[in-house]
Image (cartoon, rainbow, N blue to C red; front, side, top):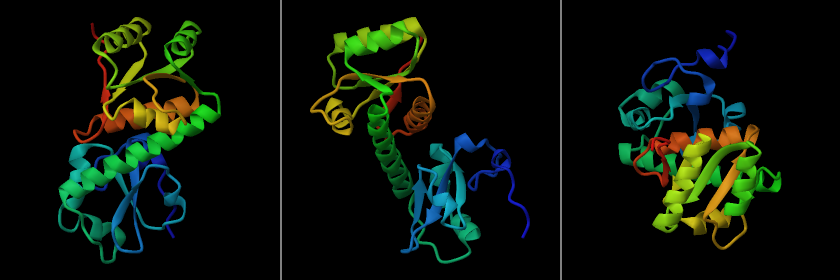
Length: 209
């Protein structure tokens, strides 16, 4: 058996372009012959054949083209439509984000509420500011100005504070600070990838004034 190529030399199954490991998401084939995106990275270690695909709308949609997935899996594949591939990818990505967010809270890598966010900002340990899209306009404007002042990633979630709160065991959370470190890096990466998809609740707030 030929040695496996290093992760940094992998190419996207959809477009054929090489990309670093952090820019690709692994897809595996379920027992029902339907492809599934694995945001966790765990399935790649046990599922055998798989597709490495850019986390971009164009490449995910391209999985619906005839023969793309069949060439990878070498067996029967129930090929999704473009809409199905995109919707499933986003839904699984958001599920993964909130699962990891809950773990980050238990690891004391998340601070909740404006006062706690300010404390993390003051100590320059912030990786990302996450705000709920259903906060009032004045509050959203204030959070955006804070992110600009400290030049940190600012992600807004249109799904609202109830969904963010659910991941953190609370009824509603309007803003959180995600600290630097492995959890922070993963959550930034995941949310920025999802922000590129029109069907996602995540959007990247510009740091430009």
